[in-house]
Amino acid sequence: MINSEMTVREVATQIPGSTRLFETLQIDYCCAGNRPLTEACASAGVEVDNVMEQLSVLGESAPGDRAVDFQKLSLTELITHILETHHVFTKSEMGRIRALVTKVIGAHGANHPELLTVGELFQRLCADLEPHMFKEEQILFPYIVRMEQAETVLLAPFGTVKNPIRMMMMEHDTAGDILRKLRAVTADYRVPSDGCSSYQTLYQALEGFEKDLHQHIHLENNVLFPKAVELES
Image (cartoon, rainbow, N blue to C red):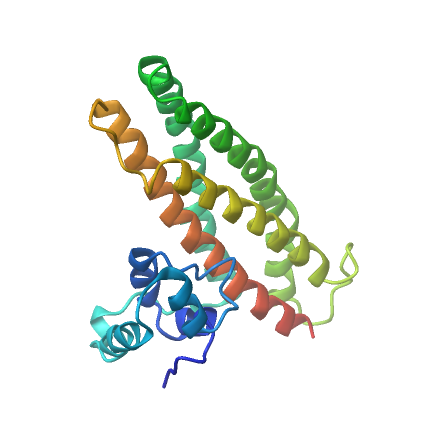
């Protein structure tokens, strides 16, 4: 059972399909997921009772209609999903969106100077995400997999798994802040009346990138990392 005093993070982990609803309502369930649902709804300007009603419907859906229950996956399975779904998508989209940004700035930058800010923010986001994913792929994730497979306690080169996790979550916060700035400067990805098809494609790509990164961070912050800390303890 869920209630309005639960945190957004707790709701997101109990009802996997709720993340789609939170995206629609612009309720942060990843970086700021530790807020009570009442507070998050107030910040988003939506009625908590209406949200609770929609969440109840999602929670009562037939099992076949539900999203994957990531809480039931092993740590290794969860990491495989994150790598094959979110890391692959992020890397491929970064290259595509960079090219789109350059193209749209060239065509519309004179009339829409906010596009220069969009380009700067996206470059910052990529500059943060690329080394972040590298550290996960080469250091943190392999250690978590070995920890799950080990029959005895592993000696972590970084003291405890909590240390790199803390750093990853701080970097997630930075990415979340950049995403919020991108949404603000683009007026919720609203294409101006004189925007061409490339302009529209860019904003659609940025919004899709945002949604995927929200889910990506949610799976790490709210599912993978807590389970890894619990396993180590």
